[in-house]
Each structure stands twice: as C-alpha cells, then as structure tokens.
Image (tube, rainbow, N blue to C red; front, side, top):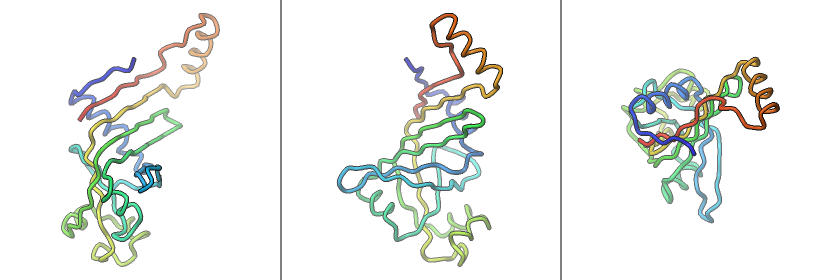
Length: 166
C-alpha cells in the first residue's frame, strides 16, 4: 500500500522533483470522454500549489479544459529515476501582468510576438494530489536489488513512493 501524506515536507518534495523537469505531459478530457495528452512547458519559478503553463488562447486544450477542468500532469526524469503524476483542476488565465511576470525569452520560440501577443493565455493548474516515485538511479543499487530479488524471491524496497494531498 502506498503511503499517503499531506505534510508540507512531502509537498515540497513534489516541487523539488518537478522543478527541473520543466516538461509535463498534460492530459485533458475530450468531449467524448477520451483522454488527450500533449507536452507542456511549466513556467513558474516557485510553487505555492499552482503550476503555470503558457498556451495559445485558441487551442483544443483550452476548449477541453473549459468543458472539463480536471487534468493530469505526468513528469518523468528516467536517468534519475524520478517520476511524478499530478492531478488538479485547470483554469484559463488571461491576465497580461501575470503573463509578463512569468515570461522568459525562451517562450519566444512559441510566441514570437513576445509577451504582448494577444494569443497568449496561461493555464493555472491547482494541484489536488501528486504521486511520486523516487528510486535510486545507481547501477550498483539496482544490481543489488536484482540480486536480492533473485535470491529471496521478494521484491526489494527500491526508493520511495508516496501519494501527497494538497
């Protein structure tokens, strides 16, 4: 059974795991109930329970979110064996001051007109729950785990897995 927690330390660990990953797969619900996923770059510099993404004002994901705001964000950093799945409620934010606050020149790749581009909107995802897997990435530790499993017939505890409520 996966440990469940709502401690500030575990909430901070979720941010610590995702802050450098930057790219998440954002899954929304289509009108027929099927899931639609696409990569999104997070743009915030800190975390207070909301994850921020820039997007085009007129896009399918905006239509899907306005019909059903429940979303899933999936982050993965395979070399470090860090994986995070986040559920939350998304909303569209059309605040030009907030866009300018979160803007970086790297965003110009998608928005060549800059932060004043009328097509820019923000997605704010209010995190409700996150589940993370933080496993050791050392080849020696993985080899030890394999050997232990082969000899004992039991899976070793390889890292940490928690569900964190926000």
